[in-house]
Length: 240
Ligand code: ZN
Image (cartoon, rainbow, N blue to C red; front, side, top):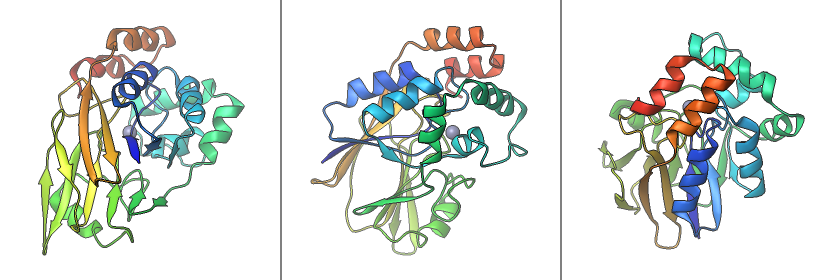
């Protein structure tokens, strides 16, 4: 099967549409949480994923948007965007978000938002954190999001080796355990403003990261019109 692995879409429909168009053909979408929050089209993004029968998990923004996580630890911009999002969500969207589990296992893959030991909050951004998490999932590989930075960590004996993928970086999966992050569709944070996506081939056991241009200005216009925080509007242009 060919799987489009997507994370941190954050209500950014033009980015989602561009990534999906680029990754087709595929059999399924697996999404790693933070479907909503920050971006201007949360209902449209959920409708798109529902129509595609995407499988996946909830992120901290999704849980907070349906009142199942308090926003004390969100920064001011994130909280303001979340309050706006809560006011926008249709009952259909709320029901879809509430149905997302924290963790899903599909064949050799565990899907979580943050980390396998703390799916809601932990960021896997350092080798020490990746090493501590390697024994915390039962499958051979774990797919994570949350950092908004594409990255792979692979176990090699007692060490954990990082790979920072670029556009069209291919990784062959083997018996080594791994933690894999596709990067963010809707708000990349590695200094590259292009949307991220990952194509996983479960027969060849290989994956490929992609970076995709999308009409950022259109999203920025919608955000400004909605009155979303200016800093969130600006950061899409920097990819930070
Ligand atoms: Zn996120």
